[in-house]
Image (cartoon, rainbow, N blue to C red; front, side, top):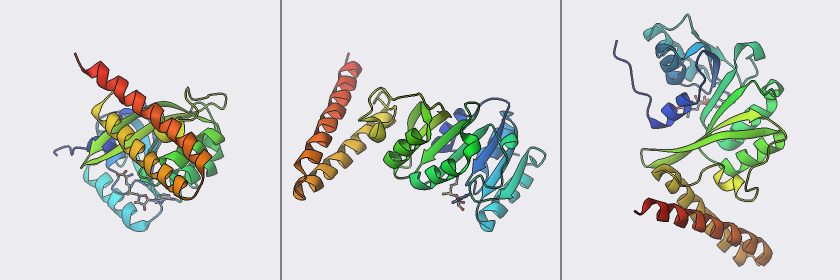
Length: 235
Ligand SMILES: C[S@@+](CC[C@H](N)C(=O)[O-])C[C@H]1O[C@@H](n2cnc3c(N)ncnc32)[C@H](O)[C@@H]1O
């Protein structure tokens, strides 16, 4: 049977999953990610979790179609509520809003263990997610941006490590570890710059001059990063 292609966004998530691990894919929908990782021989086992019976049925169909039922089990669960710590060392939560991801991570206290590897791919509210992860004691060990169908997404690999601090505290909620070193990362930084500028305009209009000037400073730092990358790209 012909192996399907994951698409750039899920492929980046897959690249951060550790070889030989036990996986939980939360919000699995079609279960493409765990099925693909099983077929590639990356994972030992996986729980493909979804909160809705419809997507879970799709997951079951794909698990059967690609004959990976020994390794990949589908399970109805709200977040990680029905998954036990012994069942998953790598946890992927992809294709959901940042606030939902944060809620799922915050509810599973067993993730607060440096052995667990979290791979998070928010569709929205990345700023809230990064702030919340820091508050919960998670470090971002790796972050990469990816473009798919004219959208730019970020994927972050997080580990519990409460002593960790980002290098640039102030910019971190907006751009995480991204530096503009790839076309996707530059596109992400440009998007955040635009968003910050809109936000600044709103603050100015509401008379919050000090809030606006703090964000203006961050915007200038972002511009400087982008210019630096531009210079490095020129011969
Ligand atoms: C847009 S799909 C993402 C599918 C896949 N992870 C991806 O990135 O392509 C989001 C899925 O998350 C599921 N979902 C939403 N909230 C959830 C929760 N609290 N726990 C488990 N699954 C959830 C939805 O039912 C849906 O199937």
